Length: 464
Image (cartoon, rainbow, N blue to C red; front, side):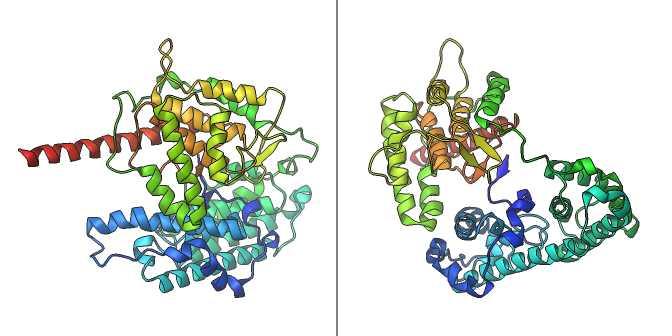
């Protein structure tokens, strides 16, 4: 699973500052022009140790910070998600940013909060530019590795020390160190997949949270990394055949042990205390743009009517919701060309039978008495079908989320929270990702049932 707004998954292709335009002088104006700047939450005037403060920080405040990250990505590019990668145990462990910590600490008044966002974004960008300066300190050539190993080793050692200094060796600092070393190798032509493996092997679990590495360890890691490189570790040629991630997903789909996955939906319908899907849309999408939220809420209302009548899930039904999501004059058609996602790392092919295969997959979301499959597994599978068939030209992530909500709603199940189910993406060829998504649905469903039962119990006790 890849968390869309988590900086530890950023690649060098995502963040290379030589390829990402940025005007530091205009960042204050830009940040204040974004949708989330209109609705900065106000930190409650209660002690930090109060459980209500933790609930506010994990709920309203974190959702707003996610919305700001999303808005920055839309404006500048994916590299910006690092603005929240603070030192120690902030929003994300072990980052290089000192101007942001976590919502509880960093969100105060609207003006102070937006000023922190600006400062954190500039700081993150400056770090990326600083790194590329270190990468370029010695022009390196993978084809001439034998005569340059001492330079590769020296560069790797210096980069480790730079990350140590910038992060302060707090919680999780070694994750960013691995990332920076991988970026360094990628910058000089090493295949990203190979680079990750070489870096992990060189470090070998010897870096730890809250502990600075010994000089001997730093030297040994740098040496092992430099001496493990080979000319063949370079990127593949441009003539490599294009992959079809629809086909790769279908292969994974067949291999997942869906019938063995624990099912949190086998206890029947549940009515939540609050509408988690609608609440998240209002908080996250509404912060980005009111029209975006309104379109999703209209689609949500329609899908629940469709669920109540037991509608068959197919592309036509999805398209009727997507008309509201995208605010188009008519339901959008199935795409007619290959689609791309994850900065073109995934390519979804198209053929004369693609839509028919998509509808056949979605048909499996209904309960089958002959070979019953758990509700949460069916909801997760249908959601991923939308992700990896990628039927629309735009808005596929929103369509996938609505699909998940519909499959649950058709059997009388709704959730009071969806924080684990949005702002995430999955890999088409990763067999563990479906299991993770089912687990997340089960977690939300268990919490929804627990709170609903607790409320009923409290009401019953009071009436007696």
